[in-house]
Image 1 (tube, rainbow, N blue to C red):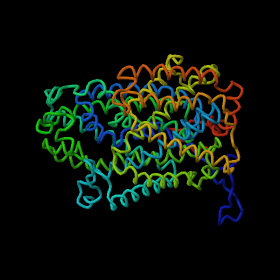
Image 2: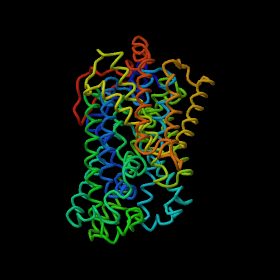
Image 3: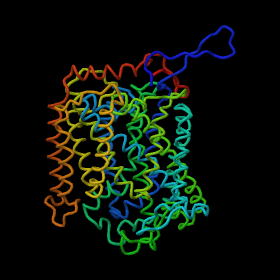
Image 4: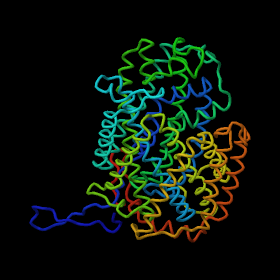
Length: 571
């Protein structure tokens, strides 16, 4: 990647030997609608196809409460991302904000969390497409049932790899065409859930279902809370940060990014809560049985489509089976995009090899795309089902999100007078509360997920160390050990609390239910104020931001573009 002046190439066939600039780097081509649908389209993916069913199994009708709590938690985290994205519109923003606040040690860690989360979403969307695709005869052999879960077969893995290749190929068309294609797909993706809510809510809605089987909340508070992280609720609401990830390609980032982040969460929350209510109310009594955990509906491989068939609206089922290709496909497509932009940002910060900054003639980070393709395909081997990947992605995502409240708090303290195109309310309270909420979500994901996440973190540190050891990136930023001194204590401490909690493997946990949440809240608060105390000084933060952000803001003062024809600007 080159951030210097654009290169020039001779235009063939012109006698005067005129030259025309050949673009390098990223281009600022995305308008507000493109950003909104990048975030909104990522939120409404495979989560809506399976989330209502999985949450109902985990919490019974009280899953509605789980969705509300999850939406509020995500909204708090989104507020910090909205302010930061407007302040510094850089590619792969969520991976880079902690870098500016705490230097190399913390920046490398949160950058890896961000990349890990983004890289694993495309494969889970592919799994959703294939799971629903079993309805079609040509795909009937792509999955088999193992221990009550549908997992990929050999032919299914081949099909999954082909779908990943399609995501990658489309990304090579360039960000402008991708944004337009994603915007068109997202109008469909929002419209079909709304149509489903309307039709099922009218055709077959039973208020008595809310107290059927073993009651409204058969598994108590633990069921409500664990459903938030393990059944796909937080996973379904993930994606609002895509506007931050693509900020380096936004035509008017300081105005558009905060709006895109906040509006996408509001739209997603409304749609998902309504879907849960309708799925619960529309279930025939024969599908519920005597237990929410073991009802006949738990065996549905295409929950909403099969429910539509059961209640006599086959035409809706046909649309939903088609949507099971479009909705996850659109989300997988945009996450493939964001994965390459996160690796681009990590390389700009000196953590990934320099080759990740390489772009082709359409300004596409080609090596990052190829890496995302390979890693996505590898995921199909240890995680051959949709449910097997949900908890891991949720925990990795929340760990990534936790970096934003910390960076937000540092910038409010160290840079109080910095330009903030959009300012989050009650920032001094919002930052620590958001950080505590993020860690509660990690607690609720359970030990079985957390220890796997620990292995993934270890792999990331090995890659980051190799980049530095073999000088694959000449920048080699300072690790700033003092500014990141809280990080190892934080990671190990959270793992220990989860292990000792009611969400861990112990039959008699040290921290029983409720007390484990108190322990997390106290521990997270201590870590937050420790991080604030040792964060980089103002002069160092400004130096780091100037080295990286200012070159990427080139052209932001050019005349405004229209929504439909955003400006093309060099990054």
